[in-house]
View 1 (cartoon, rainbow, N blue to C red):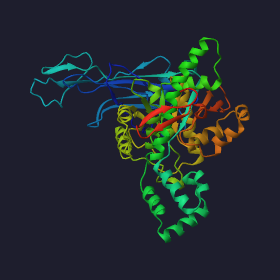
View 2 (view 1 turned 90 degrees about the vertical axis):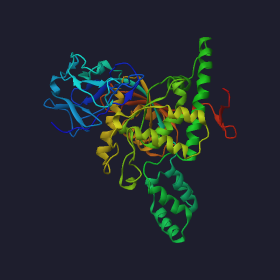
View 3 (view 1 turned 120 degrees about the vertical axis):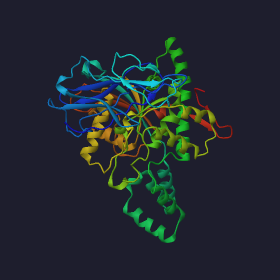
Length: 485
């Protein structure tokens, strides 16, 4: 048995419900799933349910190389504000099957009636089935926990994944500005972590001459978790506009298909992208901001829902130890993303309102989600493989993932089927080794039935196929242009 990490369930206004907590089993190709629902304090108007959102706890994250038959899961239910242990259970993994295993510990929260003279904060806990004590308005439904395995046949083994690269960050902006000042603009096509010896020599010369560009990037490098730049925000807005225009074109194309006209492959894929409701993102500020701004058209009139996945974060290396770590987690991520957008003097109140209303699921990033030391090739490959397993066991046939170019590189370097690579070798090489353009959209078909690990059996870049769009800065209005407008 070993110490695991904390899993926190965020509050959401809904009725009593439950969702899965996934833990992949390496040998059995299965997932141990925990379901939990916990209700929070009732206010004068309504009760908010604290719902168990899927939290991925793998053997690697919990300190083991794999699950074994002798593995024992220790589960604890705690009151987060007081760190008070409410219930616990120890469950041998061999006892968890495909039939839900009900755990015996059940805790009920009770709170004083507003008219009883109590402070409104303290309360008693009762076991299930007990009656309400005097002065208590009502007993909230119990916190319950179930464990079971998900077999391969219970999830779709072929997934459509739409990878979206993050918009430009303030670090990238400062880096490119410095390169232009240094006369090395061509090197700007490479990521900051790939600085050359020639550039380092030039940096020393710039320091001696006190050039502003060098001091600017020094100031940026002193910070962490860099948000999008003004150009990055524009890139995300452009993708937003093109997706909105594509929505209109898809509707028109569907009408044409009813009359007998066949849709092109890109039209079919774009239609699938626009119908995808599941959005995952790296918890890095620039990635979350990209999703919040660019992907609003996917949610139509409802709030955009984004699940933050720590496995989708940027790789930490010796050359980017400062820039690849975060400085916010949990609800702080939402606050930081909005604050940094406001610092860009964004004057689109409608867009800011939708960004503020984004539903961020932070279950996997309630604590420090970044690496505390540089990741070796082996560790990084294991993390990306785990990300693929999260995709495999997701309850969705298609999803959008906003992530970093090094994740693109890893996915297409080690998980691309040879036949698929041969169909478009130039794009495959670009995605595997090059710097991916900001806000690029790449579709991948992942077939997890394959035993060789080359799960990506087909792929295509889609942002080039989206209708063109322009931003009218004077009126701050998004509009589309081109054949579909």
